[in-house]
Image 1: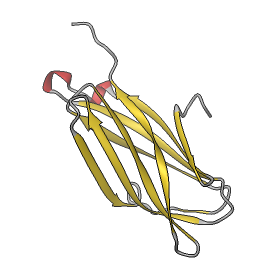
Image 2: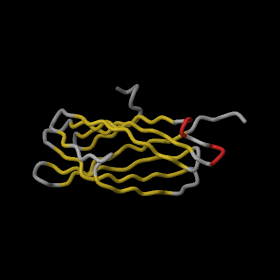
Image 3: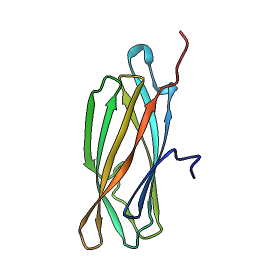
Image 4: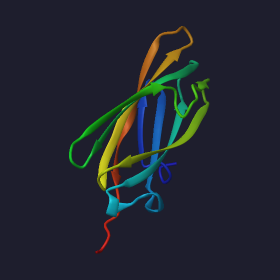
Length: 132
């Protein structure tokens, strides 16, 4: 698991794993555009059912510009995870610089309706160096 997912965070038994890859075929460095794809796996290692309700991302580029992204669910879904279940999804992130980072949190609701804020680990976005 460690080989595929380079980054992980655990909050109250909920593990968020992240694998990130630079996509040169979707990037245009000469136009100031770099693109990464990231794969998220959310694992419910707790003893209760939870539902992912919202996401909050903090995306920072190499110039220090911060973009906050909030929304419902993930890629149009609000998955319910019973104990032992996991949910995977893939998304992407464009940046105007060859380096940056992402981090954030998901808000889940427990079966009784109480919220649970689950940390998404910090992960760097780094394009490989290219020779000119």
